[in-house]
Length: 337
Image (cartoon, rainbow, N blue to C red; front, side):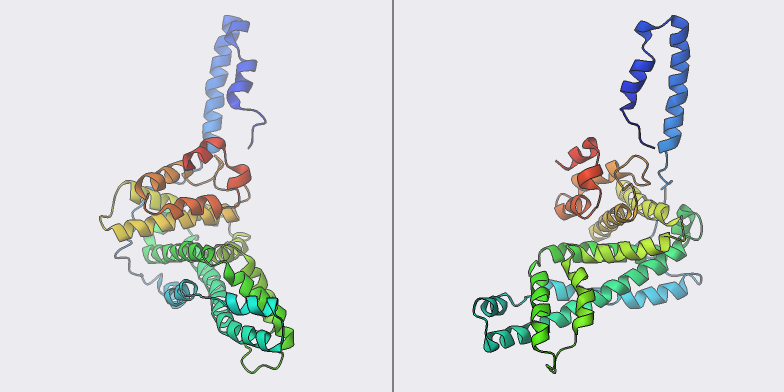
């Protein structure tokens, strides 16, 4: 529901006590009160979030075991995949030489150097699909009942969802620090037709085409999770509210200082940030509008106040979301200054 003009301007012109009869003014005040109730009702969509999830000790119940086991296998690879992006060196010098002085020798050297990096990119690409699968398993399981009740009853799966959200935020932050990855992959595709029979080629032309879109993205893991989430949202209308509740639950635990361990608090801040970013990427109207399920103002203020040493979390909300640039209200945008 979007008003064409600010509410106070519209109401001022239709109910100005200096221009109306006292009785009309009283009626207008009554209408104003009712109108306020209507708007409170319209915009009061924030899920109740007095939720405590024992992040530090959550264990899967019998109900959670199957999904928990499947997701655990996927998340177990997070550390190895993170290491691939952290340690990524690229082949800038070899590629530069092959472009500036193109001949069989320089191109062969560049291509063989790229083969090692392409293996890393392939593993990252495969894991992004697996993360999407894990996200779908978790969201489908966590959205079967009321969001608040589910988060309290399936805390081991909530912790895993948090693990996935933390991973995509951490990975894509490192991806931003590695712009050469896109250039390396583009040059690999350019050279690939010249080495069709090279014995060490694992990523052939067809797979390279599908990977090209992935490597071109600035935040590929977030995009992969958003795509997977959108697919299950088509048949489950509870998922968006669930993601909003997850963000609000993390905020609630942080604001109440439920945990003393700083590592746990950083985990919650990252999970909250990941949920905010995911929500914005799968919601048509985004996370910054008043009708969103997320306590976005409170979350931004908390990140700004309590996580000054982790400025990339605020930056993630600002730059990893789809709607900040064009649809974020000025009063919320000002909180980032």
